[in-house]
Image 1 (spheres, helix red, strand yellow):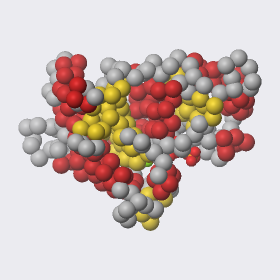
Image 2 (cartoon, helix red, strand yellow; image 1 turned 90 degrees about the vertical axis):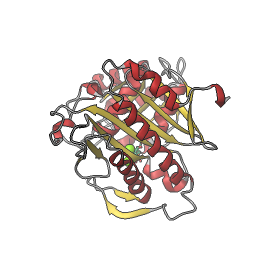
Image 3 (spheres, helix red, strand yellow; image 1 turned 180 degrees about the vertical axis):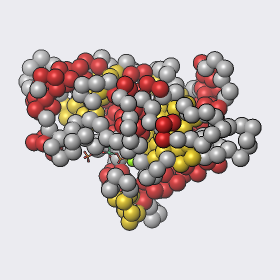
Image 4 (cartoon, protein in one colour; image 1 turned 45 degrees about the vertical axis):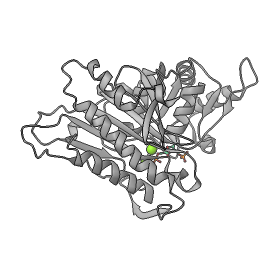
Length: 334
Ligand SMILES: O=P(O)(O)OC[C@H]1O[C@](O)(COP(=O)(O)O)[C@@H](O)[C@@H]1O
Ligand SMILES: [Mg+2]
Ligand SMILES: [Mg+2]
């Protein structure tokens, strides 16, 4: 099977022409992410054998206990991007502030910034449940050759030039978009090559799966409670099935293939929900929209939101278009 499928490397080069005046810089950047993904995949696969399970002993700026694999994945992605001098700035869930990278070659100044969630689904690392990495790429808005500023990162999601995720699951896949549809590539671990296995991925218009942490039910807004009740009601094509892995990447991936909705609403415990706008919600929203799905904060399109802080959180509703619209109806109603 694999011999006739396009490799990710071939796909990247072939699609470089999508961009007029392409310099190949974005292709090099996606290639660097491909490399870092393989390095992290190798670490994830041997997690039970080496000392990378459990907590690292520190907390990140969000007060979360960093897992050893959070720290390791963060290091590997930053190192790989820095070494290749392919970006002018990086922001990460595991770094308090953004990292500015000045190119040594002053004649060649980079124009892209990258935002990453190096390890998504951290609570699943120690229990061998699928986890992921999420990335989002923007063209800087400050002049090339000057130090990057916070402004270069606080851009609305609609300005993204590319976004994607890596899922370390039963197989390892890299799924991404550059604004021309969503394509998925599966890693053949025997030869370390990603092959196009899921061309032109599309969310079904509707589905029968809802993904939400129902343990927070009593703290949810009335609109969310009503929508969950709607999903559970014996009527028409319902009840829907509840599936919640607890890794955004994995829940999103399943729902994109099968049809479904993922929700991390605000609650009386978390006024803005849990997920981070810049390196979780924006990239997944870009992918969802490119795959005929939808993403909002329950009211407004995620990609229109103007970020104000690097690690800000927003409520997140994402998935099959008709299901997100229905949830928004309930939110509007309440
Ligand atoms: O355990 P909870 O509160 O349901 O949260 C699970 C959600 O939190 C996350 O783990 C947050 O991501 P990180 O693991 O990158 O911090 C999502 O992947 C997941 O959907
Ligand atoms: Mg995450
Ligand atoms: Mg994370």
